Length: 301
Image (cartoon, rainbow, N blue to C red; front, side, top):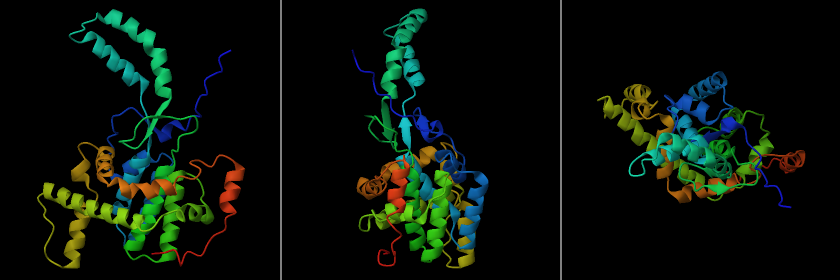
């Protein structure tokens, strides 16, 4: 007797992108809410207000989070898109099959296509399809965004207690569940060397380049004057990057950034989020929370 094929445990559908066409998110905020479906707009707005109070531009943090989200987002090929492309291929020249016959062929092959697609998952816009026999790691983007955000806030000069609080609050928003500080520590300690620093430095440079590009499209060049008020007003007009990604949408824009990041800068993030991709049992949670919260003074760069 042939054993039954093991069916992968399905993640929540909203956390998995089906198909290959990027969503046309019109703003950074909409992009974060779209990439992390657990996020609610009002709590996100309150979190952004807390950043403003700390003299941090929320848009630059959202930008970093969105790039991490699309880099580690789980994708699955849409079987309907495959069958539709097959149908068009059959009826187009030089094959020229009659549409009614093409429909018969497509219907005959649909079951096999569905089974093949169900086994194929990939992470990130350039990830290779892989077959999984377990739940795909659809929360990696949230952990990556938290790691990057904390380092970004450190580089911006925010104190340890405040940046830790804001980082954990963001992580809870992205995951849609409470996060104990010890659980975050357990993942944070797996960060290797200065790679997070290098990644954030690269992304900050990319954000500034895009900000200038957005302003150029509005014929509003970066002011040369060193007057802080003039600089602040100029940044306020362009820091949302709307004039860069408004046409193609912020998912496509974030994907273009993520694919330009040197691959070596992503590697330690992948290792850091590698532990249990999803906490699947009370034993896993007890192991994480039982590790104890370390003193992080000696670990900080």
